[in-house]
Length: 374
Image (cartoon, rainbow, N blue to C red; front, side, top):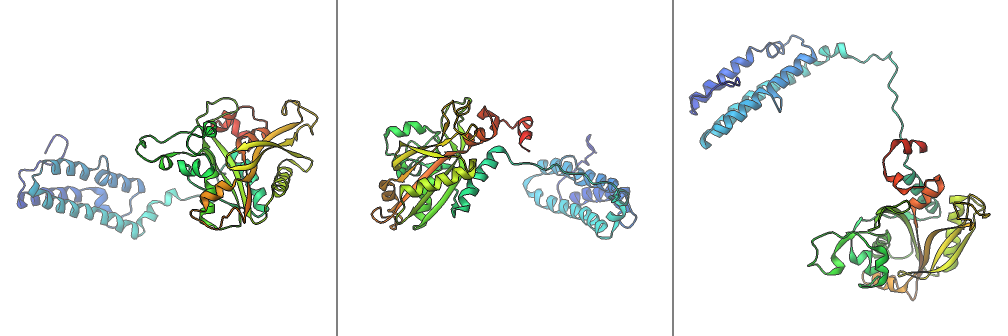
């Protein structure tokens, strides 16, 4: 017998292996629990101790024996040794299964049965994170207007994130969407290089490539930009974008859609106004402001005394974007169809709705902060 209690093998012949495993079988049959499992009830604690003593993955007797003997065994002895080992292990498992099937487990657990007269343990109900709640609210507004919901990958190619959206290589507008690029792709063509998407607009392109017009889709999701974190900026944030493409879509349709959405989100008294802007993928483009829902347009700290809050960007889809889509979906002929797109930051809207002054709180995971919204 070795110092650690594992029987020492005198050799590796068939006869010597038979003798070694016969000794183990004899040791097993002297185990009180193994004997009792033939018919006499045992407590669940005793049965579990027996199982761990022989079959435990870390300190079980068979595990220790297997490690000691198999490591030392020559190559030609490993197979007969393993066969005998598996036979012994199967014997133990069969005895445990037989005990469970005969109802002994139920007998052993009688003392641990649930007392149904005791009061139950009430589970604490969770609540939506303010970001998710705001995102669902925005998406729900557009779903009620007949929009479907689209999703797409957060790791995108340069083609879908920039080029197909009319951001050609070297375009200065790329600087405003500096992003996190996946390393080790220098040998790939630029359009195939992977990056973390800077907006959910690539899903618009992917949707149009799969689906002929008409399209009405709203796209919520997480986006990434290489921005320094401060009170109002984060390298990770959330967007909801929308796309509507059909025959005869006009800027008036865009204005009516967004005006209705803002009234649904902030109240029927809210007004909207549009200012010229620039986005590479829309022409014409506009920034949208809403009258301050907190002061009714009179001027307050939240609207910086102006009575208006800039909330999102929008515009008519640039024909050049349809040109990229036509390579896979001929139905997007800019001579026959038109469309509009818009996008808004969920984080900014959540901060405004709930009076949050620091964007980092939304990502801190601090329960003291989050419990306020339960």
